[in-house]
Image (tube, rainbow, N blue to C red):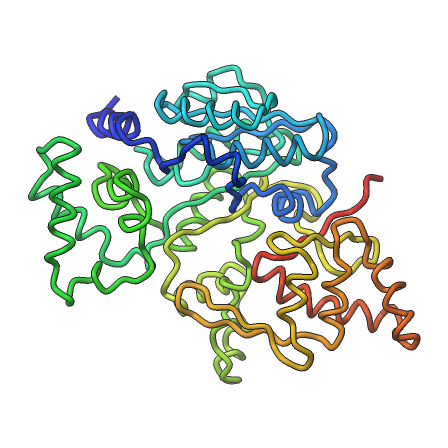
Length: 416
């Protein structure tokens, strides 16, 4: 174990991250990406996974439990077929995660105090799904860590991952270097206090001071500030580097989320520019979108084994598919859809605009996670008797492009 390894473990022992209070489980379930089950099903299992059946998930580097608690609760809601294995080297973080599970009376999580580098030799078995969120970029050898986790995948399994994004973290690494120079020998509390003094005294020209996209030092408490600015080891990635990392582990990326952020056409409208972009392959388009946007502080992506048979991502071309809204109830989202107007969303300072089909609101009002697209079409025929199936599917495809692009709509298929 290196000195950096010791410092990383000491950090998460003293400052479990992110800060969480188990009492808050009575108020809300923390959800996010990766590993929301509807999202996993859509981007890893082509919408065809039945989570009420046997399902094994590993949360590698689970921290204070956000991913593990979210998946365990959603698996519990889906039936009794799922088990989540949580691993983390920090006993302090594990204690918080266990308390959160106890507050929810979740019996489908197994907790292990274990580092990612130790997982391959720990006798954990194989997994249908592996979550590794915000961890690889803290390892001494991220490639070896990802390869070890990929080796735990069951056939046709997949992974959900998050690593830091280079462009959106402008100013972070120079400030980390400065703080190591000025306070690297101090204790944790003194380093935090000094960092806050420095932040208050930075000139307006400082790159970190001018970066509006990083905020853990503002909203994440002492643990968030330490993780952002005082961490002894982290690195960031650009899209091509992530692709290389995945390929070295025998994986292929199925999607970055939210998909619209990785589509260059979300940002530019000039026909000449779009023509050049259209000639790029999928990876190049993802990379181009990152360069155009310039604001991605992290990259969330899904991956399957490189030789995974068949499609991994659900598509909006089958009327048997069931549509699921992730964040809002259908009626609440529908209320914000105005006839003849585009859907707009602002993400990290960038305003994205999506044209919607005429029946967008009527479709959204009928999406409830149980109705198939064929069912929705049948209901819409009552008021639109001339609405043919192909025309309906074309309108739904346009709605899907907008809402799936923003991480609000996913597809699944009934068992069988």
